[in-house]
Length: 77
Image 1: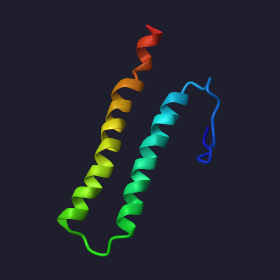
Image 2: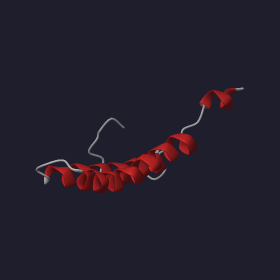
Image 3: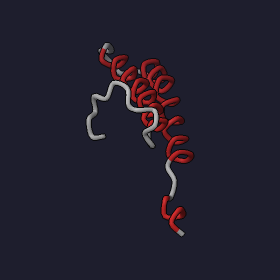
């Protein structure tokens, strides 16, 4: 699964849900990149709008790491 151009992976894949969540996070990050690419100068208003775009992505990423990535060594005890 090293191909980054996966259009729709197999739903039975162990990382399918993680992949979907990462795609949603990536879309938010891309929206932030697109937003700032149209801005000429940085200012407080632009920074606040960028935070509004990116903070949900950060929250989702933290949740994904906390809830979907586990210590598999516990499975082998």
